Image 1: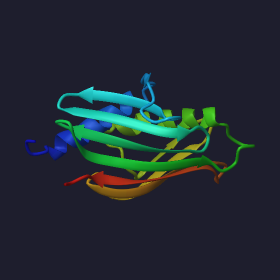
Image 2: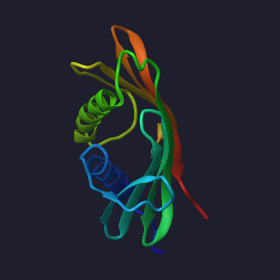
Image 3: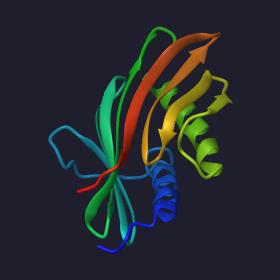
Length: 156
């Protein structure tokens, strides 16, 4: 494997995220029983987002470079107030908000965005090489959804 171009990797991650869940990318056949899987590729990179669940869910995103896993992120999200926001509404807020963040050419924290269904917030520590963070949605200042994530480079 040739040396991993980190700036190119980071740009690919943003494009992959924008094209898959947020961009309404097509699901592929499950790679594990019960999983929902989305993929995106631009040789020599390939991206797979595989998750379980719906309103409460857990998943992992992995980027391969020249066939080798080089970057990954794990996440767990859940609806905190099901009487106030549905899974579908949560997805709308996330997709609208993350689309805006990806337009800035990034995918990590320090971001807030107001929608008609709720206010999106994202904060993190670190950078795409090694990070952890949280995203959440509030309505009238009250958290109705949250997700925790962490990840970074994978090395042999």
